[in-house]
Image (tube, rainbow, N blue to C red; front, side, top):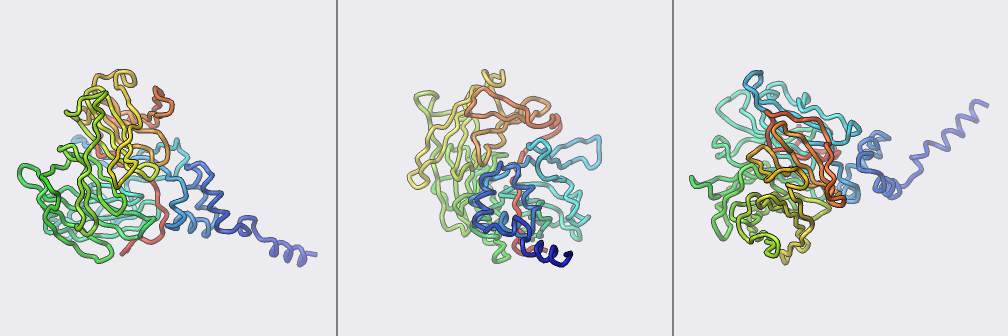
Length: 380
């Protein structure tokens, strides 16, 4: 009897094993975004399906939380790394200490960017403190790689990360060199595919200045940045295509000049732009990437929502992210840096999504979407 029972059990197998890959992906696609993290623990097969680039495009993007920094001269180390979870404890546990990295990097790395689950850090080289190098790591898989600095790295240029896991497991690091007046002079790009840097002079048709502290967006194989010239500047990974996309102006509602600040992000596969003018924030979608046609999505009045006359990153407040899958936007508000969300569909609905970050915290506040891709190009 025991042998027959064992044979019957073996023939039946586990219920999930009888599901086809397409059916599993369809099930995952219908789950709430925060549940995808738990599903990777069902089996090795499910984890592989979640991390597969082709399937990833069908699954919801899980905004787990934000990485950010703090500076406090009364402690050691003076500069601290932090992560705050926006899934109310239901997402994966992320430690900002990144203990899987070698000990020699724990206190010297400074976070610069985050793109589709990968983090970009810059650090002094452990055996040569006069030389800078980069680290790219994936906290979800604890994979990491060291990148040699370029000839510009010692000058602390603007550095950005480009990574599209649905297209390739390879990533790119962009460094921008500036003139004394802060106009972009040139660009160096590191490719994990070639393991080397290329250097190019600026190919934009006019002089551009990248907004200080602004985020970049890697989309359609190009890095996008906002500039003080009220345009979105873009360049591809080979520095062959340079593009300038004019920012929209709602002349019927606001003046067509004097954009105080601008912010870009990627949501639902489209480029979003938020322009800050006086006491109002206007959110646009680039509906047609080819024709550069922007569509007005939403307006937010700071007076009505935050009881503030103006919201500015210079005051330690501002927009930090647009949810990759939904209609929510995230702000850091007030001297104590409270992280809050605003649901555009519900309009005046403001919800605190995390604890107070603290007055000594500062940006960039980098939204983190876990990526379970097992291979990191050129990983250690």
